[in-house]
Amino acid sequence: MTEDLNSVDTLFVAILAGGSSAEAEVSRNSAAQIQRALSQAGHSAVTIELDQHCAAALMAAQPDVVFPALHGPPGEDGTVQGMLEMLGLPYVGSDVRGCAVAMDKAIAKGVFLRSGLPVTADLIVRPEQNLQEAAIEIGANFGASLAIKPLNQGSAIGVQLLPDGGDLVSSLAASLIYGSCLVEPFIRGREMTVGVLQLGDELLVHPVIEILTPEDTWYDYEHRYTEGQSQHVMPAQITRSLTERLQGIALDAHRSLGLRDLSRADFIVTEKSEIYLLEVNALPGMTPVSLYPEGASAIGYTFEQLVDALVRQAYVR
Image (cartoon, rainbow, N blue to C red; front, top):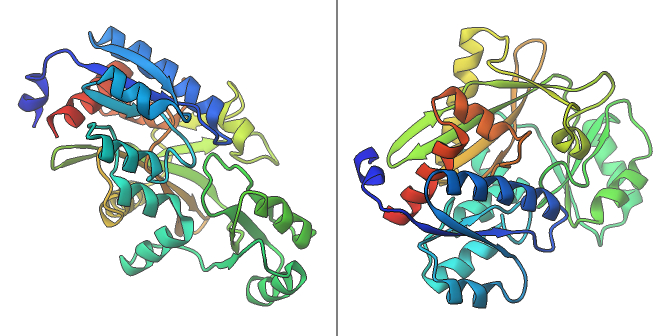
């Protein structure tokens, strides 16, 4: 596969960015980094805004490859990938099914359960439900210490954490602004992440990265994308056995969801070294403070080499 990638000539790449997602600005930041790296790798690239004119813009540009630098729906949930399939344009990342399954936390957890991967119990709450009744059911099942997550958002958008209990009804309402949500028991532990880079049939696993934030905070939107608001410890200071378990689960999750090219699995690890797989991101961020490029650098891929390999692979495919 490496020889095939190296035989590809210079490519013209269209980078999709922005759109209506709550993560649009992060997407544009990722796109700017990708365009700069592609230029350094000798490719030519143009960034196209994800709007009602983007299909026409793509057809007019006729790129060799499309790089969806997108976060959240509709760019990460299979919608854009379906459009690209219909336009007959090669693109970086997972296909329609892989993106759709990975983006929906409930469906992804069902896949993980059938694959024997470690996840928490959960309940789904939908906007039309009576929140008082939902809160009673949640309390009876999980108690007061809870995590509430929109089903189809990324970057911790809409997540409400109640580690010590609190107003569950108002927290549900805040999360439901973004659509149906998943409610899980709150798990106290260390936040860790593992990336996977797929080149052909070869799956390259990144080192485990531990994410540290200031006391009494967590890895929310602000701490993800504000310089200096989080610390990434790579490799995580954990045992070799625990490292191998986390890396193995990340690989299994990538395979079970049917993903391709790249992914990043997020975990909570308790004091007793119990592992909980939280979710898998099929289009990890590519900003200067993003975890995925940092992990790729540790397995020998600079950011320039990473995006170069991804676009070449998409073109060959």
